[in-house]
Amino acid sequence: MAEFEHVSVMAKECVDALEIKPDGIYFDGTLGGGGHTYEILKMSAPNGQVIATDLDDYAIMRAKERLKEFGDRLTVIKDNFKNFSEIKDRLNIDGFDGILLDLGVSSFQLDDRSRGFSYLADNEKLDMRMDKSSPFSAETVVNSYDEKELKRIISEYGEERFAANIAKNIVLERKKSAITTVGQLNAIIEKSIPAKFKRDGHPSKRTFQAIRIEVNGELDDLYDTVITMTRGLKKGGRIAIITFHSLEDRIVKRAFRELETDCICDKSLPVCVCGKKREAVIITKHPVTASEEELAVNKRSKSAKLRVAERV
Image 1 (cartoon, one colour):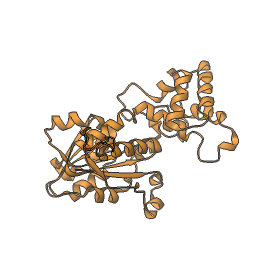
Image 2 (cartoon, rainbow, N blue to C red):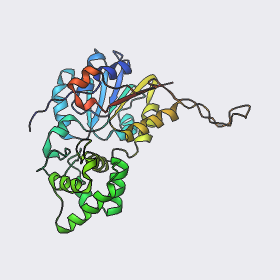
Image 3 (cartoon, rainbow, N blue to C red):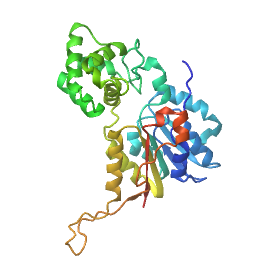
Image 4 (cartoon, one colour):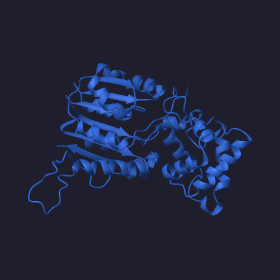
């Protein structure tokens, strides 16, 4: 397995936003290359603790090696961060001082073309599984979903205007033979999009994003998870979430607004009868984006948005 350079997106901004304490306990739901976790552990010395989760065995192995200097201050669990409540209860943690989510695909997952995440990996198998033990892959989606469902996924998750053409051509091509490689899918997408609309980046970008989201269930229960995680913070604790596309960002923004809303009664009523109380305040009224310096060295930070909320 080749080693890949991993640069954590907005690492300083995340650590600053979390206001790390030396004795705090933190949850990093997206361990990835371990860059953000490293910064949290460093800033929370000497007694801070981090609970980190990931589904990727290689990411876990790699991060454990990178972070071994911190010893038992780090606990790594192979699990989905959406199982936050169960993990918190299992470890008997009353509340966290900070929570971080860096959503999307890690750099080394994209760079390892054998994983099939990248549309540049022409000869590689269609895969896109973050958890390689899962039997459900991109190949499953492309070869078993009906045309209507393919169109829905590509349109909804990829925001691809030519989703109908792409879905139709996938179904036509797989009647001849199974679609098993990145190159085969690229060729289908290429012929499904009119030439004049291929000027803005690679034509496969949106469709690959859509299929990856479906394979890994990236948007499933994300809203509820953000709500649950914020409620799992100590008073004054903060949650910082980095998103990489508008679908994730809208969900996070909506969840934070729900948590910040205080009383939803008709304003004509003399007293509150709904009982709803503000549970958090939004720290970032507008999302934080990468600095010019970071954009110059890490092109993947271009679409990143950081939103932060604080438990009250």
